[in-house]
Picture (cartoon, rainbow, N blue to C red):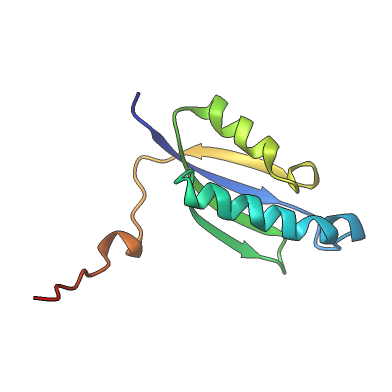
Length: 100
C-alpha cells in the first residue's frame, strides 16, 4: 500500500503546566523514534504561540491518529490533520560527495 503524507498542526496552552513540562523528554524521545522509523519527516515548534507542526508519512489517517495517541503530550494538545498533495524539503536535495 502506498504511503500518504499529512501535515498535523498541534496547538497547546502557552502557560505550560508542571505535568506538561515533565513529559517533554519522553515526548521528544518518542518523536525521535518516529523520525528514525520514517513516520515523522519534519517537526517544528513555536513555543511562544503554542503551535507545533509535523509532517507524517503513513498508510492512512487511521494509522496517523493511532500514532498521535502514542505521543506523551497528545492529551495536552488539540490537532488538525491535512493530507498533503506533496511535501518538499531541503533535506531531499542534500548533496552527496564522492571519495573518488
